Length: 115
Length: 114
Image 1 (cartoon, rainbow over the protein chains, first blue to last red):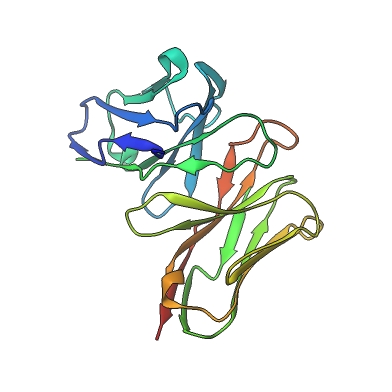
Image 2 (image 1 turned 60 degrees about the vertical axis):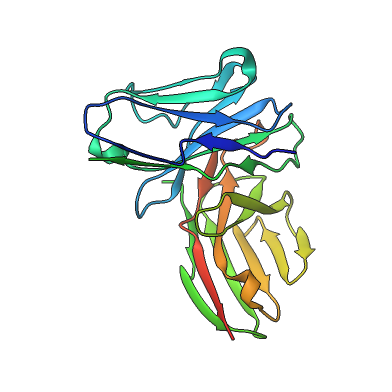
């Protein structure tokens, strides 16, 4: 069974450009999460989808970030326009349902560098 | 401010030795996670701890949770080189609710030397 996959694995863009990150969760997983780790800081929660609906987007830093999950399958995270402080590793995770004891399965992350 | 503090942040140990990683957190929570990350790889779930006094073991790793002290420990027994990785603890912010809004510690980079 395929795990959580993220694309691209690395992205280098210039300040002001737009970047779109993609996450394919494990098939059948209703829950999808985005996190990011900025250099030297902790991993931070961004948002949580349940199927196609945003359950919790309290961690989204500002309106330059737009996450979508049309059809409740894969998700995209768009940063427009990108700023220097957006550089970091963006992780996606998924879980199946609402089991209290559930594990989250993480992707390998997308390393974003904004120059 | 909600915080999850791990210590130590760096740990170099010899094979065969025992050691403990500590995770203190500042908020009430009913779920605490331990993850392992190898360089360039995804975070791998090790343990999910749900209640006070919970203890879980997998191989040479044992995790425990004291919700009253807001402390979790990850104990390593007779370390081997394959355990070298970065270990994260994370606390779920949504007490009693849906999971996933996690507060992570900075991670403990473990290096096990022969």
